[in-house]
Image 1: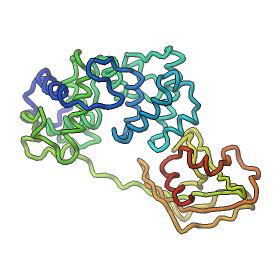
Image 2 (image 1 turned 180 degrees about the vertical axis):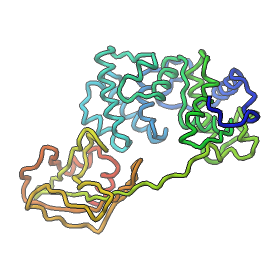
Image 3 (image 1 turned 60 degrees about the horizontal axis):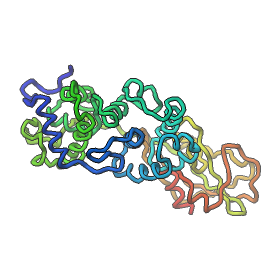
Image 4 (image 1 turned 90 degrees about the vertical axis):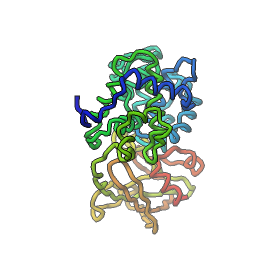
Length: 361
């Protein structure tokens, strides 16, 4: 095992006592969330799976609205499997990381068609499904089926980092933090779903990134970070690298009837399968930008004195806005289509294009 604190810094809590403290706290302070079964209820694997996919790299508050929308529109996995892909992508718009939505729909079809709507309860089998990796499979196994699994999200990492005063900075230290979590999860076979959710709740509401409420924490008696007086410095983080910058043009093309030209992006790649405004390439060299050859000699681009910025996970994007009005719809690539202004306002678009829409009107 990778040990990231010295032996004297390792907690004296035995795993059983650690879990008891966490579960006793959870029984009083558990969060009520729309995807979470109430005490005494049987968890719905569909709702657990849907929420866990949505929660990947996304906050609880951001997910709640989308989860309620999806479950109202598609209350079970069969309904989601039968949904039109464009409808799924449109309803996901704004939640980000759009590969999740594509994989969500693919996974729903497999569960509906190949598993008769029943999610496998085995972590290895779950990992073979689209969009389900190590963490998500562990969460579904534990929460939906109450089977042993080591469920480690960012909240759990933070609890472990502070409890053991882990000296290895993340992301390198993630492996060590997962191994620490395994000390308490391995071999535990009762209330495994409650325990997983209890640790996540503890990290989300008590052991928060800033200003942790250590005096209210059930683990403060043996928390090394708390004893040191500096719990908030954990988990240690390696210096952030500056995000690369990319530049591009985004276009608002209308015809005499007031219709707007939109682009369905390729299924693979960034914002894959989503609708947005036409754009040029996105380049690191701003000086190398060239206009999109979309309408041939009918293009009369008018530069707007406006640019928008959007931060993706791996780069910072700046888009300059251009407009063009043409007399007729003409012949365009099948990647593009016309939509009236009412439809445009209802169209689910990624946040970057919603920012442009505010200026285009």
